[in-house]
Length: 353
Image (cartoon, rainbow, N blue to C red):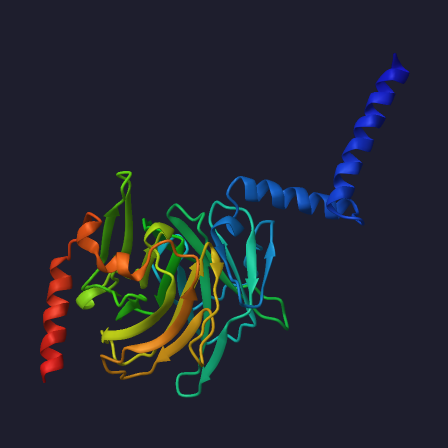
């Protein structure tokens, strides 16, 4: 009986080892624990399920964020207080301390990132450094979270006191084609899409819904116009979505426009991501990638309508002629808000001057 029990134990151990060896060819005991910990924390909603720093120098650790080792405050932190699934947030930190990297995690969720700043500048007049990172929210992001950030000094390994910021989840729509604009601070910067058939999707034409022959409704368009008319919401994200059923084949153009510089004393970085079927697509606009990135400088004026993205879709099910024949497709436009109408009227006045 003891031999049989020992055989079962041995067989179970061999099965477990075989399973682990299928994950990697060379693991020690520490490696196994790390992999199992990462899988477990991701399954239960770890930090990496909600945020990432793609395109930046960042390392993910599935464990708990290290504690502060000094009484030093992180500094002044500016970031969005609202976020969309699939959206992003610029994080700007101003501090007299010389940090080399930052810990970034979510309260109540295991795992954290070690992130090198996307940019780092020093102002001799103020004696302060300015650090910038772009934090991306995944499509899985679905709840209000508290973002925790701490600074790290490379030479000493000293860790600052953590800064905690609540970020409220905001519902948004997604499609087979998703176009997202994020900007650094509270300005009224608008996202514009021009389709192959000539439709202009923006705050003055938010899109609508088509009902097909089977009675199924397919909605597309702009669902967020952030800081409209300088009524600040601190979302700093805009979103255009189109499902395949009403997606045209052909070439699209994306523009960004400074409608109103709500605080002209500060510059504003911005980024535009375009995804089709969840993947980043090629940007044909010369001088820009995906994401397309730029900066409105201090004192930037309005009405620039800068073309930042051009792309071609070949898989769309709709056609230009079909989209022009809206009356035959049981089309219902998305109603404009009062602020949409005010912005359109003001833009008409500006154009006439």
